[in-house]
Image (cartoon, rainbow, N blue to C red; front, top):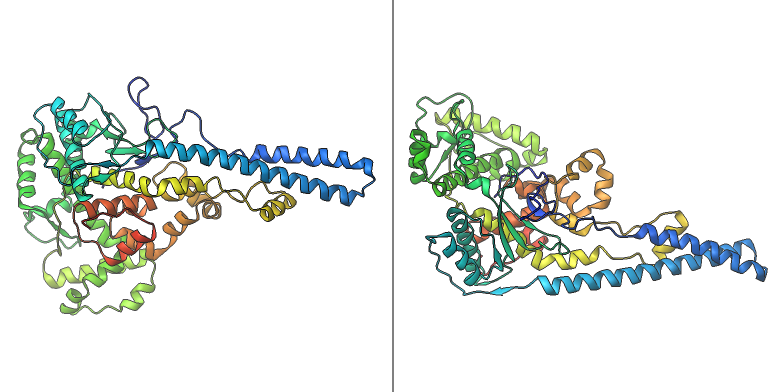
Length: 486
């Protein structure tokens, strides 16, 4: 899981891709936006109507007959133009996919050993993992991080998977750890970007200080050390971390410089995970949390009407759940405790590779759907009603863009009807309470779009984490990429 906001990312002109990208997946990588030229088709169609009308005047046809013939010619012109453009664009797309969507057959089991030099790490990425190109600016920590994550994903897939065509190591925005380029038309399609800021002591220290409440009031995550003394009246969970991580926290608090970049990244990933689990339990998937803890509530004399609870909005459920846990805390005499599973810092690579495998499985079909033209009858009715197009559903954007992407949140909040028409699958995903809570049981980021939900679940599958039946059912609904070992 990556810690995102979804702002546009910019790459310096000389050595990095010049493409507007976002957290997780990138938008159009071309210098000019690609659009379907339906408006120009209809302009030509109107000209055809005028021409047809003039040509029929000599034969003494009535105005009604002239207009009918004109409309017929316009529709014929529209449909013909649409078919030609559709065939041309789908043909181009198919060729691009054949050229760029290449699966690698790596060894079923790759043993990973940390490289001792950057050159050794780059050689491993090229020779063993079959990455086409590797940025020479990688640091040793960063190349080992990327290679280890790729090995873990490859082993989970028995060596058959879509490997990044190139790995970049560049400075990106403060909230993006890594990203991949989605647009098949972009020269950077299939590239993996790693943010160098997340391999710098200053950036990591700033994040860790915030997570641990250093210089401020202590946070809930820091209570993992169980060195709080008295139990506060305010409700909160205590996150129980791996003992090695607890020792790492103590070591960091004594001297931040005593931890290596790799150790800080490990600590950062696990503290982020702890915070995500806390949020998920209370605010994102309260119904699942209630069901999972129902026996504990009943054991302590707290009765809950689950059916009535389920009828409430997620916000109301969250409020009620906090009340229930506050009562439980009073009865227990201590803060409720949550076991936080250890998570590898390479989970970011798992997530991004989830995007790439999702592209490999679904992108071509969804991309080509964008060129679907109306039927003859639809075209006739559209022209008659003065409409330009009905096939304006953005299939690809339904999948891989969401509320952290520029413009999507604004449209979703300000014009939901237009959003629903343009992105029907994404609208359902964002507004259906059951779907949102199912996604929320994975992470808050899994709630932001279909593609991010897929990538988050995929990462968990790579790591062998337990996944609920509800989550897997939703994953299959969206045709998420399979993993042999899952």
